[in-house]
Amino acid sequence: MVSTAAVRVQGLWKRFGQQVAVAGIDLELPAGKFIGLVGPNGAGKTTTLSMVTGLLRPDQGSVEVVGHDVWRDPVAVKARIGVLPEGLRLFERLSGRELLGYSGRLRGLPGAEVDKRATQLLDVLDLAGAQHKLVVDYSTGMRKKIGLAAALLHNPEVLFLDEPFEGVDPVSAQTIRGVLERYTASGATVVFSSHVMELVESLCDWVAVMAAGRIRAHGTLAEVRGEAASLQQAFLELVGAGGRDTGSNLDWLGGGAR
Ligand code: ATP
Image (cartoon, rainbow, N blue to C red; front, side, top):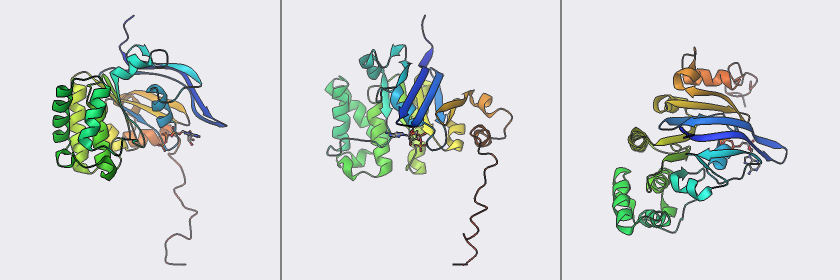
């Protein structure tokens, strides 16, 4: 049977000692959508994305990306995906241009094609002026952008982004957004994690909400939002934070008393 899911996860578990990070997730992410994976700190988003992209071996369960098993057929999967991981471990001693050249050659692209695509990506992402600077000297936002360029260079079918907008200024965010919208319009899939509900609401057409290692809701934006006024409201209700005390017992804070 031909799969229409970009990602299919079954019975996925990950424990770190006593800590259960991912507690038996089943999830199908539809192809050709802009997908948001949202959840509070420690929900298990990064652990899930790491297992889905072949960076972390699950304790149990299986993951398929565009019909290939991530752990049985990792080369087929890695050829079809692009990843912007958390923490952005990049080759610091290369310039931005060199990093793209190296990534392109690792992906088996011909040199002239790598050069052409690198020039276009550096231009679009407003990094042309910094292309000969070492990555170690890049700002947080510039690192995100060069990491994104490296993840897009081989035109992957599915792009995984862990917090792509964190530390990125509004102008660059708008640029990244434009690039990603163009990319999904061509039928590719973007899966990204974020805490920023307004962003997810404005960008995504499909959402999965995670809390405490489990999927609490998934579906189209409208399905997950349900009767709630906004995704933020739905999220707070889903993760059980709707009525949380927001600090009323911090009676020493403010008021001028020392
Ligand atoms: P955030 O939004 O804060 O980045 P997250 O949803 O990405 O959070 P994870 O980083 O996946 O959450 O963490 C899920 C849980 O697993 C947390 O309780 C975290 O402390 C734990 N965890 C993650 N990685 C490790 C590790 N390498 N060793 C031990 N515990 C870990």
